[in-house]
Length: 396
Image 1 (cartoon, helix red, strand yellow):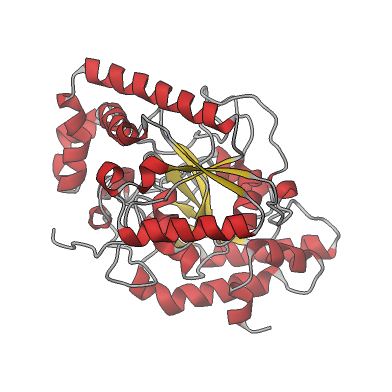
Image 2 (cartoon, one colour):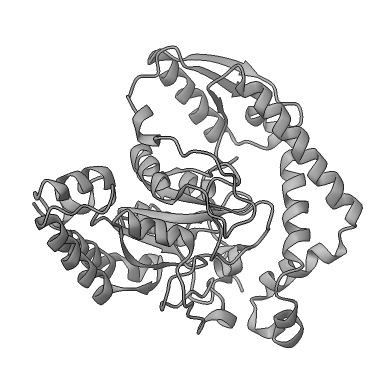
């Protein structure tokens, strides 16, 4: 099998073939490292590549397979991890100059989950500085969309989206506060899952907004997203906001049959005057509904009246919550932040506490509307972004 054939495989297929000894983890890691060498000079998805460590772990994974020892469903699968997620003895910069020499002495809980499942970490992925702003804020350079290098790969998990889409890892982890998993997935033609808040531990992750931050997978297939989520979901007492509920078998429901599934098409998200959705995106969603209906799903238009103000509430909440982060650095080392990041950190100080309270109240009401809709429908369908990936403004 050629390297190109290998890197184009899904993570699930790759894991199965490794287990059956058709492909070795060493082959897979070398193929992905070669791919990184070949294309990342143009895309800039990685901040740190762990070539030697990944190869050593791949050799151990191969020995384990030969001995009949399979750690978990991602055994031997090469993955990428967003650089705000702590990795023991490996730089974790959050794409900031101010954190460029920070090396944690422990793994984030989600990294522990990946390792327990047998995954091999290829490296740390680029992002916007402290998960805020545009791609230009990264101290390690702009990440480009692999489909069109002039366009935004989606923020803030820029490297997670770009690396996965350009086959520089089999699957990846991102972090989503206000769209940072969903945006890169949308812009790069991938699948992203923002899990329910409290489903995945945030312990060992540089935060942006305590009540919104969520870790989630970015993958090339739904199955790979399910597989990756299975590795990182579950209760962790080190994150006090976790919910101690059983983790379902996400992969078991992927039968390929959606006959009879009830899908609610949220009309507000398709109204250009309400949500600003562009015609190409609107048309794409409508084509998707036709395809889903042809496969046996029941699609019905529904309304979530508070949807138009949900985004405003989210921006207020995140602005206020991030304004309390890193006050010492902002006071003593302000010039080590990108200007846009510095502005983002301080904007929340100008927002009255009453506005924050109202935004959280709106959030509760929006959630209530969505949960009521989900009592009648299996899925709520809406665009992942209001417009296709835009051309980046690279002016400092």
